[in-house]
Length: 248
Image (cartoon, rainbow, N blue to C red; front, side):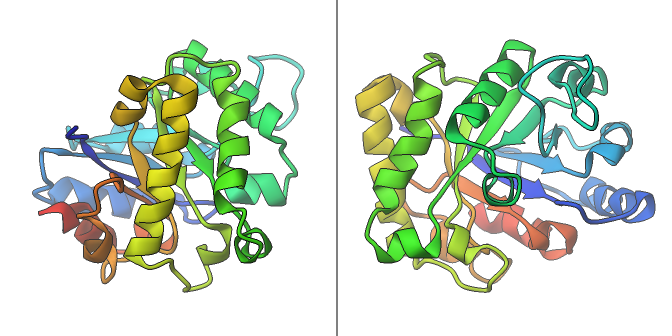
């Protein structure tokens, strides 16, 4: 099945008002492929700015995180309704930095994913293993556990894009080989077929998120089960455009 190529840009806690505007201005000037879906996730402080400045029809804006409940007495949290109110259409959930630093559990991430979808957002659901887990040969078991927490409470996956991010390859300069990444992506899709059904599993876009840059993106692009990329640091640089155009 042909799935639309997808590139996400996670700015993380980087940038200023001026630099975020500059990144979007650069995207606005580009002749981007019409068949590539792009989502940028700036820091929450700049979500409104990003929505207002974005003029690219194939680019949408997302949050990096939302809470598992709505507005209320949750100091420091971001409600999905507020993200929607700003005009953003996406959010990340399950990013490895929130799993490891903030200690978010699989169940909590699943709850956030469901709440976001129920309140009008699409979700980039991040999964992946640590270096120790990879060395132990339990990569697919870890990914399955993280996916199962979501599939237990969400049956319709039409609003979910999965991003496989090997934790050991984020911000380290290390990367899985294209064949390694493809093998894991296929394992993820095969597992989804067992839990949410073959039809849905074939439609779910699975992104690779392990230190992708303008130089190595083309090495991954043609693999059957790699449907795009979730990009970190490179999304802050001009090479982000090269990654978006790597499908050409």
